[in-house]
Image (cartoon, rainbow, N blue to C red; front, side, top):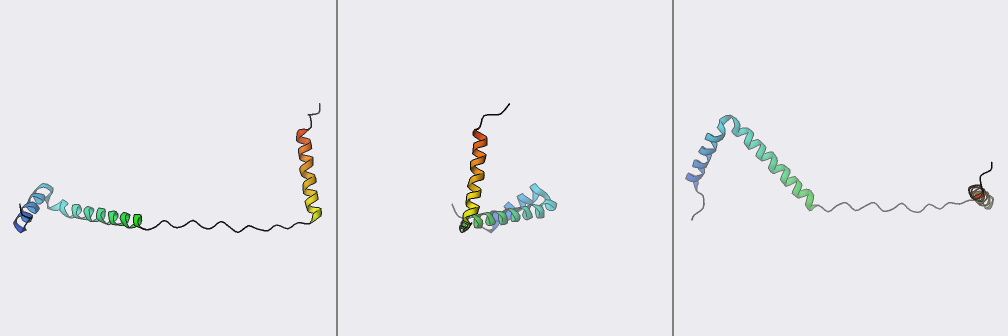
Length: 89
């Protein structure tokens, strides 16, 4: 069996012309071209490596005075004491 030559291609094109009609052939060719472009675009996107995630933000140093720290701890102790205390009537 040989490969497809010019006479066979002409016969195939004539059969396609008879099946689809001359009005629909440009639309068919355009849709095939668009599908081919989308396929190539998808293949190219799949080949590209995924972008690496952004590095986590650097830790922020928080400074506070000893008085601020003691006030914060006192508020925390008061909140825990209120939470643990039995409800009053």
